[in-house]
Amino acid sequence: MRNDSFKDFVLDQLGAMPDLTGKAMFGGYGLYHRASFFGIIHKGRLFFKTNDMTQPMYRSRGMQPFRPSARQTLKRYYEVPVDILEDPRDLAAWAQHAAVPPSAQLVLPFSAPLPASLGYGDLSVIAGTET
Image 1 (tube, helix red, strand yellow):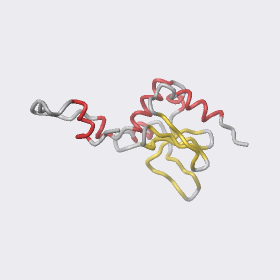
Image 2 (cartoon, one colour):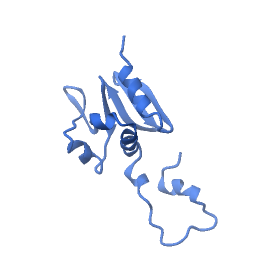
Image 3 (tube, one colour):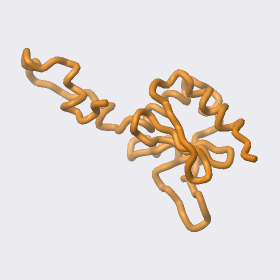
């Protein structure tokens, strides 16, 4: 019988994150924000997807990449530090950085106003982040 208490703790900590779903995988549990796979819960540890901008935050704290086996390392997924895991606000912020690609987090510079036929709701289509 699997112990799901850590998974339940993580999901509770991330409870305020909208559109959070998960499913069993890798002998653990995968976390999704909408259709974006961003986290792995495995053997009582939480790993978030990193990118070139966020990976240094993990490495500077001595966090290691996800190693599902001795022969495999997923170099984009790093363990979340315990102090971040224990604070729901910090965890939600780190989860957001893991779930949303850096290009979607950046404000696009517009030199001219948007055409009247194009509303601000259409910016997600332009940025490629539509849901």
